[in-house]
Image 1 (cartoon, one colour):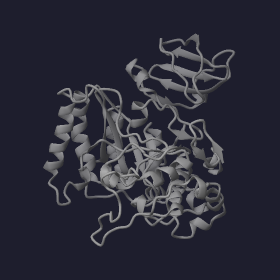
Image 2 (cartoon, rainbow, N blue to C red):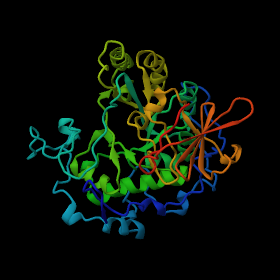
Image 3 (cartoon, rainbow, N blue to C red):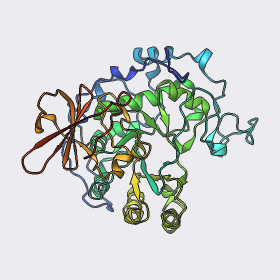
Image 4 (tube, rainbow, N blue to C red):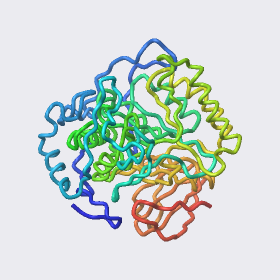
Amino acid sequence: MRRLGQGIQLVSADYWSNFNSSVNPLNVKVPQITQPRRLITSRSARYYTPDPLVDHHHAHRLGPNWLTATTNGMNTSAEFTALYNSINWDNGGPNISVRTFNTDGSMNTNGYDVANDPDCWWTVSGCTVPKLQDVNADIYKCPEPDTWGLFYDDGPNCSHNAFYNFLQEQNLRASMFYIGSNVMNWPYGAMRGVQDGHHIAFHTWSHQSLTTLTNQEGLAEFYYTQKMIHLATGVTPRYWRAPYGDVDDRVRWIATQLNLTTILWDYDTNDWQAGDGVPESTVQNTYNEFIQMGNNGSMASGGNIVLTHEINNTTMQLAVENIPNMLKSYKHVVNVATCMNITFPTWSRPVPFPSLANLLRKTAWVRAVPPSTLPRAPGLRAQARFLVGRHVFAQANAGVAVLMTVRGPLRFAFKSFPMGPPFLPSLYVF
């Protein structure tokens, strides 16, 4: 155990270092599969057996698909037992009860002070400011004015490539909240997300209401989803979203033990309801209202984070039809990591993201390229190189940034600057 400067007590900060993936997130190569080429289609992607080189989960004990991550005894594995026992549950954990459902499926609030909501239980009050000390604060809106925080829940799936193609054509990178069970079934979809430069976050293993799970079950939902995503992509997410938004300070405290941060939202399209008892036109009207807010000054003092899904053809088609108007109405349509200036949103082999400030300075999206394809700056041992528009940025060992303009013959220019906190480099723009 160690205590951070803010008083947050964590398990070993590098618990994820035990994850082992052969996938290099800076150079992802997604195997080809047969898949639909149109977004709206009655034909699903053909089921595929992943390449053994990237299909790691059979060599690891992981939870069963769409069941609580402890269902097959995962809570008794040596690695999980060590993780669970490293957390100070008795002296550090909050005294908050596990929630239950009523017979109609609603949350049972009998005996709970809903009016004062002492546990910051989002489901009953929409609370996004934790009341428990020493838990990571929620992210629920983008602070930059005129910004649409773009994210999609419930991926990946092999039938979503047409949607990813559209995002790529629009030069958009979203926050993708992947479900662990889906990543187990469709690892190539998660690899595509990393390859395209999306912000990879997660949405738990089995998409259950976490306040109704025990401490052990909740920890397993976090841990094994992180592990599965790492096995498939080489990155370990640091950010997550609660299914149905069902989070309270007990769940936040468990997440904080893994130094995870909860991302919620402040506007909901309810797109997942379209065609399921709710007319598609109703969801479209909601989109129209949110898009109009970008034109009428409602977002002049701060941006939003809008809840949307990549769950089926209807939700993806709604996104495709509305994104052009988003881009016209908002100055910035960016993923949550970028709008919050989180430049390294994953653990291990971190894939860098541009801060919003860099985007505002008209730097292009940071796209990772293999170091072997780029010239080495003379006299510097660069740790990593990234293509930034038509410039190459190299983060060097000695805290020197190298920006090389790629126009005809390569010319080198050097600029020294103080490096920021670990893993938070600045980008010098000429």
